[in-house]
Length: 229
Image (cartoon, rainbow, N blue to C red):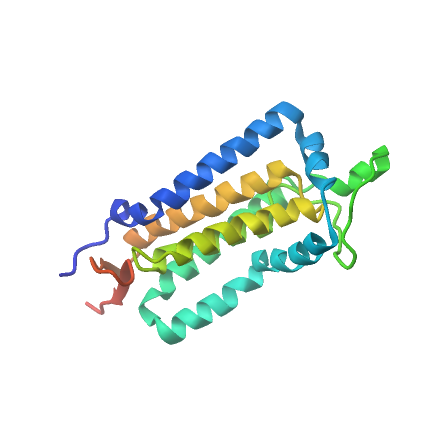
């Protein structure tokens, strides 16, 4: 039986991933409050190995904005009725990243400036290091927005959601490991990516001329149908 989408019912699918994220992010914030922005980064950056250099240099690409393209393509081909939530979250998360990085904090320096202050940093060969637009981490915004969108599209008891959840955190950590961002940049990016997903669900419930309906089944959490009248 179809019923009008209720955001609270959809948000229930995000409850535990959001709770786990909040706990981890608050613990990370506590680390920053104790050691400070720069020192917390330096503490993480000093631990490295050839394996993790290779691992994080590749997994960080899962936070690239282009990751939305295969996700949209797959959804349009195989699950045509679920494309709208992806499009909305793509627009929202990308817009928030541009606003924060390009307009509000355009001159936020990345960790590389610490070299000029006499600190020795570990850089991974082949990874391009940037100087500005540090806050927040755009890759982390994308990783969490994509992960939480995929969690919405999974069956209620599908344990792949934990894989997406963990992958998002690995992408975020990779930005620190690769000396691209400070921990605070990554934490902010995670919050923004999660917030973007919640906001997307809310906007989807208001979107017209689309009438949004929800399936109370063990398949996808909701579907969108277009009505011409």
